[in-house]
Length: 197
Length: 272
Ligand SMILES: C[S@@+](CC[C@H](N)C(=O)[O-])C[C@H]1O[C@@H](n2cnc3c(N)ncnc32)[C@H](O)[C@@H]1O
Image (cartoon, rainbow over all chains, first blue to last red; front, side, top):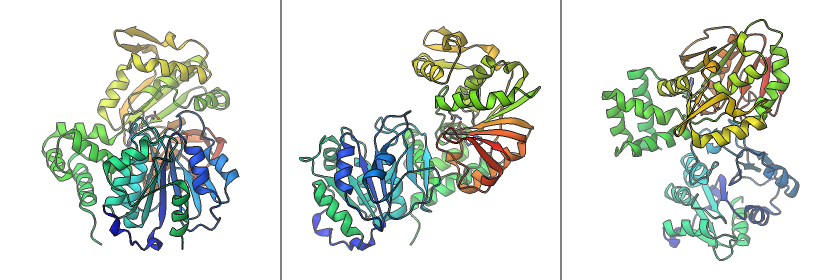
Protein backbone atom coordinates (compact mmCIF):
# COMPACT_ATOMS: atom_id res chain seq x y z
CA UNK A 1 0.00 0.00 0.00
CA UNK A 2 1.49 3.33 -0.84
CA UNK A 3 1.27 6.50 1.14
CA UNK A 4 0.07 8.71 -1.71
CA UNK A 5 -3.23 6.92 -1.41
CA UNK A 6 -4.16 8.31 1.97
CA UNK A 7 -6.14 11.33 0.92
CA UNK A 8 -8.96 9.51 2.53
CA UNK A 9 -12.22 11.09 3.50
CA UNK A 10 -11.85 10.15 7.15
CA UNK A 11 -15.47 11.00 7.87
CA UNK A 12 -16.42 7.77 6.18
CA UNK A 13 -14.97 5.69 9.00
CA UNK A 14 -17.76 4.11 11.07
CA UNK A 15 -15.90 1.97 13.56
CA UNK A 16 -12.47 1.56 15.16
CA UNK A 17 -10.91 -1.77 16.17
CA UNK A 18 -7.85 -1.88 18.40
CA UNK A 19 -5.49 -4.79 19.12
CA UNK A 20 -2.98 -4.76 21.95
CA UNK A 21 -1.09 -7.18 24.16
CA UNK A 22 1.82 -6.71 26.59
CA UNK A 23 1.91 -3.09 27.75
CA UNK A 24 -1.70 -2.55 26.80
CA UNK A 25 -3.05 -0.95 29.93
CA UNK A 26 -0.67 2.00 29.69
CA UNK A 27 -0.93 2.31 25.93
CA UNK A 28 -4.74 2.34 25.94
CA UNK A 29 -4.79 4.89 28.75
CA UNK A 30 -2.71 7.29 26.67
CA UNK A 31 -4.52 6.54 23.43
CA UNK A 32 -8.04 7.07 24.75
CA UNK A 33 -7.49 9.74 27.36
CA UNK A 34 -10.05 12.52 27.11
CA UNK A 35 -12.22 10.94 24.40
CA UNK A 36 -15.58 12.71 24.64
CA UNK A 37 -18.77 10.92 25.71
CA UNK A 38 -20.33 11.73 22.37
CA UNK A 39 -17.51 10.22 20.29
CA UNK A 40 -19.38 9.13 17.19
CA UNK A 41 -17.83 5.71 16.57
CA UNK A 42 -17.71 2.42 18.44
CA UNK A 43 -14.21 1.49 19.70
CA UNK A 44 -13.70 -2.27 19.92
CA UNK A 45 -10.65 -3.64 21.71
CA UNK A 46 -8.98 -7.02 21.91
CA UNK A 47 -6.44 -6.88 24.71
CA UNK A 48 -4.75 -10.24 25.34
CA UNK A 49 -5.61 -11.36 28.85
CA UNK A 50 -5.36 -14.63 30.77
CA UNK A 51 -8.28 -17.04 30.37
CA UNK A 52 -10.34 -18.28 33.26
CA UNK A 53 -10.23 -15.19 35.45
CA UNK A 54 -12.79 -12.39 35.27
CA UNK A 55 -11.39 -9.38 33.45
CA UNK A 56 -11.24 -6.00 35.19
CA UNK A 57 -10.55 -4.09 31.96
CA UNK A 58 -14.04 -2.70 31.51
CA UNK A 59 -14.21 -1.65 35.18
CA UNK A 60 -10.79 0.01 35.09
CA UNK A 61 -11.45 2.00 31.93
CA UNK A 62 -14.96 2.89 32.95
CA UNK A 63 -13.42 4.72 35.90
CA UNK A 64 -10.76 6.42 33.80
CA UNK A 65 -12.73 7.52 30.76
CA UNK A 66 -15.79 9.57 29.91
CA UNK A 67 -16.76 7.03 27.23
CA UNK A 68 -19.26 4.30 28.03
CA UNK A 69 -17.31 1.09 28.57
CA UNK A 70 -18.62 -2.48 28.32
CA UNK A 71 -17.36 -6.01 28.14
CA UNK A 72 -18.80 -7.29 24.87
CA UNK A 73 -21.48 -9.95 25.19
CA UNK A 74 -22.76 -12.43 22.64
CA UNK A 75 -25.34 -10.82 20.27
CA UNK A 76 -24.90 -7.41 21.82
CA UNK A 77 -25.68 -4.62 19.33
CA UNK A 78 -22.69 -2.35 18.62
CA UNK A 79 -23.22 1.29 19.57
CA UNK A 80 -21.31 4.49 18.84
CA UNK A 81 -19.50 6.25 21.66
CA UNK A 82 -18.99 2.97 23.43
CA UNK A 83 -15.69 1.23 24.18
CA UNK A 84 -15.94 -2.56 24.12
CA UNK A 85 -13.50 -5.14 25.45
CA UNK A 86 -13.40 -8.78 24.37
CA UNK A 87 -14.11 -11.13 27.30
CA UNK A 88 -11.33 -13.49 28.44
CA UNK A 89 -11.37 -16.96 26.89
CA UNK A 90 -13.55 -16.04 23.89
CA UNK A 91 -12.89 -14.75 20.42
CA UNK A 92 -14.86 -11.58 19.71
CA UNK A 93 -16.30 -11.29 16.21
CA UNK A 94 -18.45 -8.76 14.39
CA UNK A 95 -21.45 -10.00 12.43
CA UNK A 96 -22.49 -8.16 9.26
CA UNK A 97 -25.68 -6.95 10.95
CA UNK A 98 -23.43 -5.09 13.42
CA UNK A 99 -23.78 -7.06 16.53
CA UNK A 100 -21.11 -9.10 18.30
CA UNK A 101 -20.78 -12.82 18.45
CA UNK A 102 -18.40 -14.84 20.61
CA UNK A 103 -16.72 -18.16 19.96
CA UNK A 104 -14.50 -20.64 21.78
CA UNK A 105 -12.80 -21.80 18.60
CA UNK A 106 -9.15 -22.80 19.10
CA UNK A 107 -6.64 -20.11 20.02
CA UNK A 108 -4.96 -18.07 17.28
CA UNK A 109 -1.29 -17.22 17.98
CA UNK A 110 -1.85 -18.82 21.41
CA UNK A 111 -4.50 -16.21 22.11
CA UNK A 112 -8.21 -16.24 22.77
CA UNK A 113 -9.44 -13.58 22.28
CA UNK A 114 -7.36 -13.12 19.12
CA UNK A 115 -6.89 -9.78 17.41
CA UNK A 116 -6.93 -11.41 13.96
CA UNK A 117 -10.44 -12.82 14.54
CA UNK A 118 -11.84 -9.40 15.50
CA UNK A 119 -10.02 -7.50 12.74
CA UNK A 120 -10.96 -9.89 9.94
CA UNK A 121 -14.63 -10.08 10.85
CA UNK A 122 -14.83 -6.29 11.36
CA UNK A 123 -13.21 -5.70 7.95
CA UNK A 124 -15.78 -8.00 6.33
CA UNK A 125 -18.52 -5.93 7.96
CA UNK A 126 -17.34 -2.33 7.55
CA UNK A 127 -14.93 -2.64 4.61
CA UNK A 128 -13.48 0.81 3.83
CA UNK A 129 -15.40 2.35 6.75
CA UNK A 130 -13.12 0.73 9.32
CA UNK A 131 -9.95 1.88 11.06
CA UNK A 132 -7.71 -0.75 12.65
CA UNK A 133 -5.05 0.10 15.23
CA UNK A 134 -2.28 -2.27 16.31
CA UNK A 135 -0.31 -1.35 19.44
CA UNK A 136 2.38 -2.76 21.71
CA UNK A 137 2.67 -6.53 22.22
CA UNK A 138 4.98 -9.54 22.32
CA UNK A 139 3.20 -11.63 19.72
CA UNK A 140 2.42 -11.71 15.99
CA UNK A 141 -1.36 -11.68 16.46
CA UNK A 142 -3.12 -8.85 14.60
CA UNK A 143 -0.68 -8.42 11.72
CA UNK A 144 -2.67 -10.55 9.28
CA UNK A 145 -5.93 -9.03 10.50
CA UNK A 146 -4.67 -5.49 10.00
CA UNK A 147 -3.51 -6.34 6.49
CA UNK A 148 -6.98 -7.73 5.81
CA UNK A 149 -8.47 -4.40 6.94
CA UNK A 150 -6.21 -2.55 4.49
CA UNK A 151 -7.09 -5.00 1.71
CA UNK A 152 -10.78 -4.25 2.24
CA UNK A 153 -10.02 -0.54 1.83
CA UNK A 154 -9.95 0.32 5.53
CA UNK A 155 -7.43 2.48 7.35
CA UNK A 156 -4.48 0.59 8.89
CA UNK A 157 -2.64 2.25 11.79
CA UNK A 158 0.36 0.94 13.70
CA UNK A 159 2.04 2.26 16.83
CA UNK A 160 5.60 3.41 16.19
CA UNK A 161 7.71 0.40 17.29
CA UNK A 162 10.35 2.78 18.66
CA UNK A 163 7.80 3.96 21.21
CA UNK A 164 6.01 0.66 21.92
CA UNK A 165 6.69 -0.98 25.28
CA UNK A 166 7.12 -4.28 23.40
CA UNK A 167 7.70 -3.86 19.68
CA UNK A 168 7.07 -7.40 18.37
CA UNK A 169 3.45 -6.81 17.46
CA UNK A 170 3.90 -3.55 15.55
CA UNK A 171 7.02 -4.95 13.86
CA UNK A 172 5.17 -8.09 12.75
CA UNK A 173 2.63 -5.90 10.99
CA UNK A 174 5.35 -3.80 9.34
CA UNK A 175 7.07 -6.98 8.15
CA UNK A 176 3.86 -8.07 6.44
CA UNK A 177 2.73 -4.90 4.66
CA UNK A 178 2.94 -1.11 4.72
CA UNK A 179 0.17 0.42 6.82
CA UNK A 180 -1.23 3.90 6.13
CA UNK A 181 0.32 5.46 9.21
CA UNK A 182 2.98 4.48 11.75
CA UNK A 183 2.69 6.91 14.64
CA UNK A 184 3.35 7.30 18.35
CA UNK A 185 0.31 7.06 20.63
CA UNK A 186 -0.21 10.84 20.71
CA UNK A 187 -0.43 10.94 16.91
CA UNK A 188 -2.76 7.95 16.75
CA UNK A 189 -4.95 9.62 19.35
CA UNK A 190 -5.22 12.84 17.30
CA UNK A 191 -6.04 10.84 14.21
CA UNK A 192 -8.78 8.81 15.90
CA UNK A 193 -10.32 12.00 17.28
CA UNK A 194 -10.33 13.49 13.77
CA UNK A 195 -12.14 10.46 12.37
CA UNK A 196 -15.22 11.66 14.20
CA UNK A 197 -15.79 14.98 12.43
CA UNK B 1 -22.68 -3.49 -4.33
CA UNK B 2 -22.18 -7.08 -5.45
CA UNK B 3 -21.61 -9.58 -2.69
CA UNK B 4 -18.01 -10.72 -2.24
CA UNK B 5 -17.40 -14.11 -3.89
CA UNK B 6 -16.43 -15.74 -0.60
CA UNK B 7 -19.81 -14.81 0.92
CA UNK B 8 -21.61 -16.36 -2.03
CA UNK B 9 -19.51 -19.51 -1.85
CA UNK B 10 -20.16 -19.78 1.86
CA UNK B 11 -23.92 -19.64 1.39
CA UNK B 12 -23.78 -22.20 -1.40
CA UNK B 13 -21.67 -24.59 0.65
CA UNK B 14 -24.05 -24.37 3.59
CA UNK B 15 -27.01 -24.92 1.28
CA UNK B 16 -25.27 -27.91 -0.34
CA UNK B 17 -24.60 -29.47 3.06
CA UNK B 18 -28.23 -28.96 4.03
CA UNK B 19 -29.62 -30.47 0.82
CA UNK B 20 -27.21 -33.37 0.73
CA UNK B 21 -26.80 -34.28 4.43
CA UNK B 22 -29.67 -32.47 6.23
CA UNK B 23 -27.27 -30.67 8.58
CA UNK B 24 -28.65 -27.16 8.91
CA UNK B 25 -26.02 -24.46 9.42
CA UNK B 26 -28.04 -21.75 7.68
CA UNK B 27 -28.84 -19.87 10.86
CA UNK B 28 -25.44 -19.99 12.50
CA UNK B 29 -23.47 -16.85 13.34
CA UNK B 30 -21.64 -16.33 10.07
CA UNK B 31 -18.45 -14.54 11.15
CA UNK B 32 -16.96 -17.53 12.95
CA UNK B 33 -18.55 -19.96 10.48
CA UNK B 34 -16.60 -18.25 7.72
CA UNK B 35 -13.33 -18.59 9.62
CA UNK B 36 -13.91 -22.29 10.14
CA UNK B 37 -14.81 -22.89 6.50
CA UNK B 38 -11.65 -21.10 5.41
CA UNK B 39 -9.65 -23.31 7.79
CA UNK B 40 -11.29 -26.43 6.35
CA UNK B 41 -10.49 -25.28 2.80
CA UNK B 42 -6.85 -24.93 3.80
CA UNK B 43 -6.61 -28.17 5.78
CA UNK B 44 -8.22 -30.22 3.00
CA UNK B 45 -5.95 -28.56 0.45
CA UNK B 46 -8.66 -27.08 -1.71
CA UNK B 47 -8.17 -23.88 -3.71
CA UNK B 48 -11.56 -22.44 -2.97
CA UNK B 49 -14.76 -22.99 -1.04
CA UNK B 50 -16.38 -23.98 -4.33
CA UNK B 51 -13.87 -26.77 -4.84
CA UNK B 52 -14.53 -27.96 -1.30
CA UNK B 53 -18.26 -27.85 -2.02
CA UNK B 54 -17.85 -30.22 -4.97
CA UNK B 55 -15.94 -32.67 -2.83
CA UNK B 56 -18.42 -32.41 0.05
CA UNK B 57 -21.29 -33.22 -2.33
CA UNK B 58 -19.59 -36.27 -3.79
CA UNK B 59 -17.56 -37.61 -0.87
CA UNK B 60 -19.30 -38.31 2.46
CA UNK B 61 -15.89 -38.76 4.10
CA UNK B 62 -14.95 -35.22 3.13
CA UNK B 63 -18.21 -33.98 4.61
CA UNK B 64 -17.37 -35.78 7.86
CA UNK B 65 -13.94 -34.11 7.85
CA UNK B 66 -15.52 -30.69 7.25
CA UNK B 67 -18.03 -31.31 10.03
CA UNK B 68 -15.13 -31.51 12.48
CA UNK B 69 -14.31 -27.90 11.59
CA UNK B 70 -17.87 -26.64 11.55
CA UNK B 71 -18.81 -28.06 14.96
CA UNK B 72 -15.90 -26.86 17.11
CA UNK B 73 -15.23 -29.94 19.27
CA UNK B 74 -13.58 -27.86 21.98
CA UNK B 75 -14.40 -28.69 25.60
CA UNK B 76 -13.01 -29.12 29.09
CA UNK B 77 -14.09 -30.84 32.32
CA UNK B 78 -15.54 -28.47 34.91
CA UNK B 79 -15.03 -25.59 32.48
CA UNK B 80 -15.78 -22.40 34.45
CA UNK B 81 -15.58 -24.02 37.91
CA UNK B 82 -17.88 -21.33 39.39
CA UNK B 83 -20.70 -22.69 37.23
CA UNK B 84 -20.41 -26.13 38.84
CA UNK B 85 -20.00 -24.59 42.27
CA UNK B 86 -23.21 -22.61 41.80
CA UNK B 87 -25.00 -25.76 40.63
CA UNK B 88 -23.90 -27.57 43.78
CA UNK B 89 -24.87 -24.76 46.07
CA UNK B 90 -28.01 -23.41 44.48
CA UNK B 91 -29.53 -26.01 42.18
CA UNK B 92 -28.71 -29.38 43.78
CA UNK B 93 -30.67 -28.65 47.01
CA UNK B 94 -33.79 -28.09 44.89
CA UNK B 95 -33.14 -31.08 42.61
CA UNK B 96 -32.99 -33.25 45.74
CA UNK B 97 -36.71 -32.79 46.22
CA UNK B 98 -37.46 -34.76 43.02
CA UNK B 99 -37.83 -38.55 43.23
CA UNK B 100 -36.36 -38.91 39.74
CA UNK B 101 -34.49 -36.51 37.50
CA UNK B 102 -34.11 -36.04 33.78
CA UNK B 103 -31.11 -33.95 32.81
CA UNK B 104 -30.30 -32.82 29.28
CA UNK B 105 -26.83 -31.79 28.21
CA UNK B 106 -27.32 -30.22 24.81
CA UNK B 107 -24.24 -29.87 22.59
CA UNK B 108 -22.17 -32.19 24.80
CA UNK B 109 -19.32 -32.42 22.30
CA UNK B 110 -16.69 -34.99 23.35
CA UNK B 111 -18.33 -35.57 26.73
CA UNK B 112 -16.30 -33.52 29.21
CA UNK B 113 -19.39 -31.69 30.42
CA UNK B 114 -21.26 -34.99 30.80
CA UNK B 115 -18.62 -36.61 33.00
CA UNK B 116 -18.32 -33.42 35.03
CA UNK B 117 -22.06 -33.43 35.67
CA UNK B 118 -22.13 -37.14 36.48
CA UNK B 119 -19.31 -36.67 39.03
CA UNK B 120 -21.13 -33.76 40.62
CA UNK B 121 -24.40 -35.70 40.83
CA UNK B 122 -22.59 -38.76 42.21
CA UNK B 123 -20.97 -36.70 44.96
CA UNK B 124 -24.32 -35.14 45.82
CA UNK B 125 -26.01 -38.54 45.98
CA UNK B 126 -28.24 -37.84 42.99
CA UNK B 127 -26.72 -39.89 40.17
CA UNK B 128 -28.64 -43.08 40.96
CA UNK B 129 -31.97 -41.35 40.48
CA UNK B 130 -30.90 -39.29 37.48
CA UNK B 131 -31.06 -39.94 33.78
CA UNK B 132 -28.75 -37.84 31.62
CA UNK B 133 -29.50 -37.24 27.94
CA UNK B 134 -26.29 -36.11 26.26
CA UNK B 135 -26.88 -34.86 22.72
CA UNK B 136 -24.83 -33.45 19.87
CA UNK B 137 -24.85 -33.33 16.07
CA UNK B 138 -21.30 -34.56 15.57
CA UNK B 139 -21.21 -38.38 15.51
CA UNK B 140 -17.44 -38.51 16.04
CA UNK B 141 -17.69 -36.34 19.13
CA UNK B 142 -20.53 -38.49 20.47
CA UNK B 143 -18.43 -41.61 19.95
CA UNK B 144 -15.54 -40.05 21.89
CA UNK B 145 -17.95 -39.04 24.61
CA UNK B 146 -19.22 -42.60 24.85
CA UNK B 147 -15.68 -43.95 25.17
CA UNK B 148 -14.69 -41.45 27.85
CA UNK B 149 -11.00 -41.48 26.97
CA UNK B 150 -9.05 -38.23 27.39
CA UNK B 151 -5.45 -37.22 26.81
CA UNK B 152 -3.27 -37.31 29.91
CA UNK B 153 -2.10 -33.79 29.02
CA UNK B 154 -5.50 -32.39 29.84
CA UNK B 155 -5.83 -34.08 33.25
CA UNK B 156 -3.96 -31.37 35.11
CA UNK B 157 -6.38 -28.70 33.96
CA UNK B 158 -9.38 -30.97 34.64
CA UNK B 159 -8.09 -31.68 38.15
CA UNK B 160 -7.55 -28.01 38.87
CA UNK B 161 -11.02 -27.14 37.60
CA UNK B 162 -12.55 -29.98 39.62
CA UNK B 163 -10.98 -28.71 42.82
CA UNK B 164 -12.04 -25.12 42.18
CA UNK B 165 -15.58 -26.30 41.44
CA UNK B 166 -16.00 -27.60 45.00
CA UNK B 167 -15.21 -31.27 44.24
CA UNK B 168 -15.43 -33.41 47.37
CA UNK B 169 -12.92 -36.13 46.57
CA UNK B 170 -9.89 -36.47 44.38
CA UNK B 171 -10.38 -36.23 40.63
CA UNK B 172 -8.12 -39.28 40.23
CA UNK B 173 -10.85 -41.39 41.87
CA UNK B 174 -12.83 -41.10 38.65
CA UNK B 175 -10.42 -42.43 36.03
CA UNK B 176 -7.83 -45.09 35.40
CA UNK B 177 -4.62 -44.12 33.66
CA UNK B 178 -3.39 -46.05 30.61
CA UNK B 179 -0.42 -45.06 28.44
CA UNK B 180 -0.96 -41.45 27.36
CA UNK B 181 -4.65 -41.41 28.12
CA UNK B 182 -7.11 -41.73 30.97
CA UNK B 183 -10.30 -43.75 30.90
CA UNK B 184 -13.26 -42.38 32.83
CA UNK B 185 -14.96 -44.73 35.29
CA UNK B 186 -17.76 -46.44 33.40
CA UNK B 187 -20.12 -46.18 36.40
CA UNK B 188 -20.34 -42.49 35.49
CA UNK B 189 -22.04 -43.24 32.21
CA UNK B 190 -24.42 -45.95 33.35
CA UNK B 191 -27.14 -43.32 33.67
CA UNK B 192 -26.29 -41.56 30.40
CA UNK B 193 -27.91 -41.87 26.97
CA UNK B 194 -25.79 -40.37 24.17
CA UNK B 195 -27.87 -39.36 21.18
CA UNK B 196 -27.75 -37.50 17.90
CA UNK B 197 -30.02 -34.47 18.24
CA UNK B 198 -29.93 -31.07 16.55
CA UNK B 199 -31.20 -27.92 18.20
CA UNK B 200 -31.64 -26.53 14.69
CA UNK B 201 -33.91 -29.23 13.23
CA UNK B 202 -35.16 -31.68 15.89
CA UNK B 203 -37.89 -31.36 18.51
CA UNK B 204 -38.26 -32.06 22.22
CA UNK B 205 -37.88 -35.72 23.25
CA UNK B 206 -38.39 -35.75 27.02
CA UNK B 207 -39.55 -33.74 29.99
CA UNK B 208 -36.52 -32.55 31.94
CA UNK B 209 -35.79 -30.84 35.24
CA UNK B 210 -32.41 -29.39 34.33
CA UNK B 211 -30.81 -28.51 31.00
CA UNK B 212 -27.18 -27.53 30.57
CA UNK B 213 -26.34 -26.03 27.18
CA UNK B 214 -23.01 -24.31 27.27
CA UNK B 215 -21.11 -22.58 24.48
CA UNK B 216 -23.46 -23.80 21.80
CA UNK B 217 -25.85 -20.85 21.52
CA UNK B 218 -22.97 -18.48 20.77
CA UNK B 219 -22.62 -20.26 17.42
CA UNK B 220 -26.23 -19.49 16.44
CA UNK B 221 -27.83 -16.30 15.13
CA UNK B 222 -30.61 -14.78 17.20
CA UNK B 223 -33.41 -16.56 15.38
CA UNK B 224 -31.86 -19.98 15.94
CA UNK B 225 -31.05 -19.09 19.54
CA UNK B 226 -34.75 -18.38 20.01
CA UNK B 227 -35.61 -21.77 18.52
CA UNK B 228 -33.20 -23.59 20.83
CA UNK B 229 -34.28 -21.74 23.96
CA UNK B 230 -37.89 -22.43 22.91
CA UNK B 231 -37.09 -26.17 22.90
CA UNK B 232 -35.58 -25.86 26.36
CA UNK B 233 -38.64 -24.04 27.63
CA UNK B 234 -40.90 -26.73 26.21
CA UNK B 235 -38.81 -29.58 27.62
CA UNK B 236 -38.38 -28.19 31.11
CA UNK B 237 -41.02 -29.15 33.64
CA UNK B 238 -42.53 -26.71 36.13
CA UNK B 239 -39.78 -24.44 37.57
CA UNK B 240 -37.03 -26.35 35.75
CA UNK B 241 -33.43 -25.09 35.55
CA UNK B 242 -31.38 -23.93 32.57
CA UNK B 243 -27.61 -23.40 32.64
CA UNK B 244 -25.76 -21.54 29.86
CA UNK B 245 -22.13 -20.73 29.03
CA UNK B 246 -20.47 -17.96 31.01
CA UNK B 247 -20.87 -15.36 28.23
CA UNK B 248 -24.28 -16.45 26.99
CA UNK B 249 -27.45 -14.69 27.99
CA UNK B 250 -31.17 -14.70 27.37
CA UNK B 251 -31.27 -10.89 27.33
CA UNK B 252 -31.40 -10.37 23.59
CA UNK B 253 -33.86 -13.16 22.86
CA UNK B 254 -37.57 -13.77 22.57
CA UNK B 255 -37.77 -15.95 25.71
CA UNK B 256 -36.01 -13.53 28.07
CA UNK B 257 -39.17 -13.07 30.11
CA UNK B 258 -39.86 -16.79 30.48
CA UNK B 259 -36.88 -17.40 32.76
CA UNK B 260 -35.56 -15.76 35.90
CA UNK B 261 -31.86 -15.69 36.78
CA UNK B 262 -30.99 -17.56 39.96
CA UNK B 263 -27.21 -17.25 39.72
CA UNK B 264 -26.70 -14.30 37.41
CA UNK B 265 -22.93 -14.38 36.97
CA UNK B 266 -22.92 -18.15 36.47
CA UNK B 267 -25.78 -17.94 33.96
CA UNK B 268 -28.17 -20.27 35.72
CA UNK B 269 -31.85 -19.60 35.14
CA UNK B 270 -35.15 -21.03 36.28
CA UNK B 271 -38.37 -21.33 34.35
CA UNK B 272 -40.94 -18.87 35.68
C1 LIG C 1 -17.83 -25.54 21.67
S1 LIG C 1 -18.67 -27.03 21.87
C2 LIG C 1 -19.27 -26.92 23.53
C3 LIG C 1 -19.00 -28.16 24.33
C4 LIG C 1 -19.44 -28.13 25.78
N1 LIG C 1 -20.86 -27.89 25.93
C5 LIG C 1 -18.63 -27.10 26.57
O1 LIG C 1 -19.14 -26.01 26.87
O2 LIG C 1 -17.49 -27.38 26.90
C6 LIG C 1 -20.11 -26.80 20.87
C7 LIG C 1 -20.85 -28.09 20.56
O3 LIG C 1 -22.14 -27.78 20.04
C8 LIG C 1 -22.47 -28.75 19.07
N2 LIG C 1 -23.52 -28.24 18.19
C9 LIG C 1 -23.38 -27.37 17.16
N3 LIG C 1 -24.58 -27.19 16.56
C10 LIG C 1 -25.48 -27.95 17.22
C11 LIG C 1 -26.87 -28.19 17.06
N4 LIG C 1 -27.57 -27.62 16.07
N5 LIG C 1 -27.50 -29.02 17.92
C12 LIG C 1 -26.79 -29.61 18.92
N6 LIG C 1 -25.47 -29.43 19.12
C13 LIG C 1 -24.81 -28.61 18.28
C14 LIG C 1 -21.16 -29.00 18.37
O4 LIG C 1 -21.16 -30.23 17.69
C15 LIG C 1 -20.15 -28.95 19.54
O5 LIG C 1 -19.94 -30.22 20.05
